Image (cartoon, rainbow, N blue to C red; front, side, top):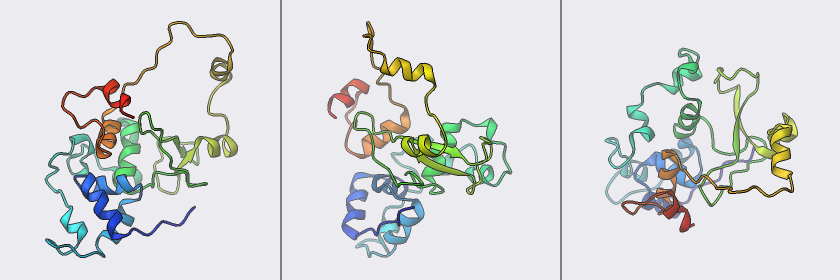
Length: 209
């Protein structure tokens, strides 16, 4: 796995200018929360003890509730350590919480891939359960793999019918692309300065990409 990159003061200040909390800043920089916290605490602040303290947003002001770990309806640590049954919760929400709270870095565990698709800011990563048990979220059992590494080391991502549909030379009549963005993706686009205008919908956001 690639070694975590050092974070310069200018990088952290730039992330702070674009975000509303330390957790959002680490997402903006595509690093784990613990890694961001270590570097942000190194640099002095004009108003606080350090940059990490300066960018704290404990009240969650301006942050959607679904992205605020302090107001969550479950403890992801309880799920990781097996004290809470994961089947009662949305797998996508658990996946996002693993990223948000710094338990998993949002990149391929094998090759380090972390590029985002420009049309909707999503990343081609799959959450892989090493023992095949999709209820076992122990940190020694889960990892992110990009599509290529998953295909190479684990198996097919698409079934034969899906591949046939993608490769078929026949034109698809009246085809339309579903540009619907979930709230998590909208928030991440907003952190990049996209979708901030009042009344923005999916088509307006994507038209500016």
